[in-house]
Image (cartoon, rainbow, N blue to C red; front, side, top):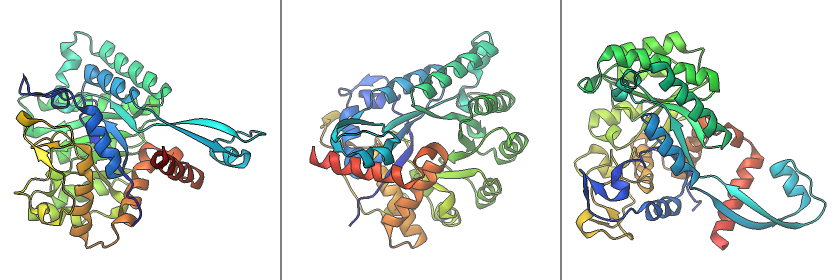
Length: 354
């Protein structure tokens, strides 16, 4: 069976749970290395770390910069020309740096008050822009976000502030030419109005963690440059599964939104899950096991499995390839060619041998 290729488009590695902190209390040591090891072993090729504020985006970039997979290999001049457009005259060892951790820069709708609480909204925005440009230069920032509207949690930030600074963040996308990583919760009408006004200011985007209605799904799909991201919260009920069933495969991406949004035993989608990992409670932490109740990127495979079962797709490998290329089309367009695919395949083979 072919190895699955998956990209988890939404991981909150800045959350304290990955440092062993739950509700302000330390239960175990930070275990990000073990979490990543499980993800790579499960077939996750890349992870996008979510930024939800200026400070959190800085931390997300630092996390993304810790990544580096060095593969030592011997390539001939033709292979080098194909892979790097660089002609070497002799066969020689080469070091390839293959990035697997990336991030976003932006402000979550529930935290948009930070613009005004900073004392100078424009200075705050310029700091976001500066950080985004820095991350682009480092090859790590791949999207503007997480931004959008969340009317389920207006107690954190009122709707007028959310709308003002959601629209403002299209300036980031327009200036940097990055796609957008979007959040929409119980706000479809206002969200779509703002996207409509700004649809010429961004190249593409994904509305992640989608949990809304079939009507709202269809509103999003009416924008040709928007994709929909699903996770465990998208698969809770039979109605959720019906909504997901109606999303064309070529408009889908998968995610965990970890450490949240796991597929729970009470969810309608659980009956379609095939892969399981040993788990232990946080009080009995073991790096060889996932933490019970804490989602993590390896479990994006379960989202893929539920999606396949929901849509009646037997070839999960082909489904994973389609979703992989959907994600590359938006966030990693440089990989949409045969040479890049060959490079990734070669890197996987080399990793197995090392």
